[in-house]
Length: 316
Image 1 (cartoon, one colour):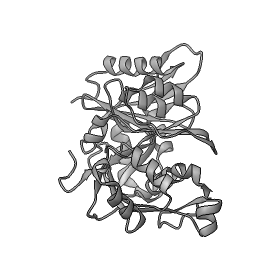
Image 2 (tube, rainbow, N blue to C red; image 1 turned 45 degrees about the vertical axis):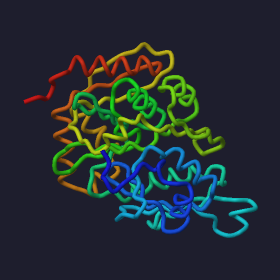
Image 3 (cartoon, rainbow, N blue to C red; image 1 turned 180 degrees about the horizontal axis):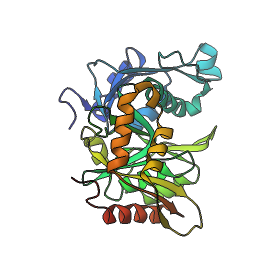
């Protein structure tokens, strides 16, 4: 459960919420991070609050890890031909986006803060889910289907840690949940709208972005409510989405799993020796494979099958 000093963002009155987000900012908590969010565009603010309505916020303020401001540079860019600028206080230089894509700019800013600023947790570009105390890490490049697969698993009895950022404690090796809304792209949008539970919250669809059409999906409530519960690595699975392919589980060596984890990490070199130790422990203890799947349903079946077949792997 969230700290007693927080409230569900959706419980904050609209007037108070608008004042907070146009002045000092709203302190929003997701996993181990609190971000002070200021959004000066009403439409972007409304979309943000709709999407993050199930998350804990600090209406009276909190010590923040990160700061994010979305604004128009001048009167012209705020009211006539509005453009959304993003400032994370990290010397970034984001290209302004049209205000109708302001939510995309906001999510990019939140991603940037973690990718560049996170130094106390080992960071992986990976989808991460958990079930029965076993975390599955799916490091993969864009286009592999990891976000869709992680999101699909979250509606099939798994807990979503993240579709984008795997976070591991550099002292214990445990994975830390960071269940931000899932970023769905292009063909994955109708797939998840069909697969997700009734009543799932989706953002509008944003067309014409650098990655095509994007839509954000709020994770299941259980994933948000349990975002303070850590768990240890159970498997490293390399997902490969191939339309028309025969579903297949292919074994990989622990050396290959280690290599893929290192290649997916944004701060491996910054952390140094402790990151090597954590990576080694994960690769040594986790079950490892590659899965090739033609659609979401088959991908989920392969993950379930592999985890069932390797139950107890790595146990002392």
